[in-house]
Structures are given as C-alpha cells and as structure tokens.
Length: 324
Image (tube, rainbow, N blue to C red; front, side, top):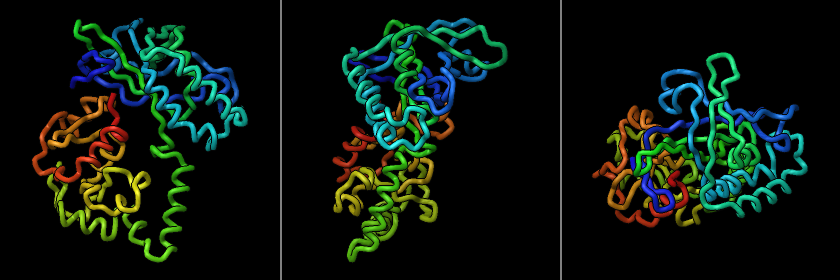
C-alpha cells in the first residue's frame, strides 16, 4: 500500500495496530491514580514479530507525528476533558488543560520529528521504548489514560529510509463515540419514539424498519462477501445517523448492506470506497489483518451499488475514513 504525506510518497511496510496508553505513562496532570508516571512506553512482547517491526536489541528509530492528527485527537477527546467519564486527580483543571494544549499544538510545524530507542535496563520479555525529544513528551502530555491508543505505521520513503508514523486515537471502552454522546443520542431516539410520526427515524437509527427494507430491496446482499442471508446482514449508514438530517437518516441511498465484520470496518473508518467501486483501506490496520479478512486496497467490487451514493461516499472518505 502506498500513501502520500505532505506531498511525499511512502510505502506502508507494516502496522503496529494498537498500543494502549496506560495511566503509568501519562504526565501527572492526566493521571487517574497516584504516582509521577514513567517515561517508558510498552510496545509489546519480545518476539520475532516485534523485532521485525522495530529492529534488533537497542534499536534507534526515526519517527514523526502530524500536527493535524494531534489537533484531531484533541477534538475527539474534548468531550472527555469537559465531561470526564474517568476519575482524574485533576478533573477540575481538565478544561483549561485542553485549551493550553491546543494552543501549544497550533504553534507546532506540520510534521514533528523525533527518535525513540529501546529501553534496555529492564529484565523480562517485554519491550519498552523511551525518548527525550519534544514530540514524545507531547504524546505523554496529550494522552488520556485507558481511552487513548497509539498506532504506529512503518514506512519506507523513496530512498528506502525507514520512518515510523505515530498517530493517537481515542477509544471509549470499545466505542468510537464518547458515552456522553451515546447517552445524548439514545435520549434523542427515545424522544423520537415518543413523538408521533417519528418512529421511522428511530428505527432507521437501529438499521431497522422501512430504511432496512428499502435498502435490502436495492441491494439484497453484501457486495463484498456476496452473502445474501438477510438474517446476518446489517443496514449500515454511509453518513452516520447522528450526523444526518431527517431525510438522510431514512434515505436508502445513504447505506449499504454488509456482513458484520465489514460493517464494523466501514463504520470505524478502516474501509471506504471510491465512486468507481474501488476499496480504500486505512493504513492503521496491519497487512496481516487485511490478509486474514481477504480484502486488499484498490480492489474493484463490481456489485457495490455506488451509483447515486457519491455524495454520501465523499462524506465518508473525508470525515469517517481513517486515512492520512
């Protein structure tokens, strides 16, 4: 897979999909528990896979963050700063921390380079990394524990130089939406169900009712797997229900029928499509994962009903897809 970052081409070699940020790693202001925190980051068990990704003992690797990714992460976690679900020791100061951190990130260059090295003064089969560079300190400062994870993409540039692209993601205990928004959305659904004439909207939220019936009539199978048993097909919105107006919420053109795995990939932004039916895979899942799923980048799916869905797909590629 090839990607373009700030007008430079890179080959994606591999991806370390999910490194959860523990409370022990973050700066004291972000902590839930006691302690001053540790600057070392656990990246995995010491085995052949981890060594192939990072390198031999005592590795030193060149890495970078993107300013736009950090700003996006701050926007995604703003609700946790303002309406925290976790019991932070500095809960009352979190809103001010968010403002200060956003100002700091806005002043940074578009790409923030740094180096990390293996932390070797640790016994046992666990691999840790450390760094004294500013970008690494920013990761510790921005990350909220337990709900933040890092994905690292191993890249080769045109000179075959290895670079490691770090990106922060928010994951709210298995959901991409913060509980505050989930509760708000559920309340909206309850209001709709109690309001005369709006039950069709609330059922569309759950992929049911007339929305599902109309979508099944248009596309009675998953265009990726070709499975047609409607008992295991999910009516998946292209533009999310919560982001849609009342017309878009029940518009069957704003959807595809997918089997559960591909519904999840599409909903989480790891998979999208071009207007000419080609797959777009996010670089933030590993090649091994995509291989096991039997899907590849830029593959044409002839049975994908993309006609008439171009505007919805454009929204998905821009707002939902986990690209660069």
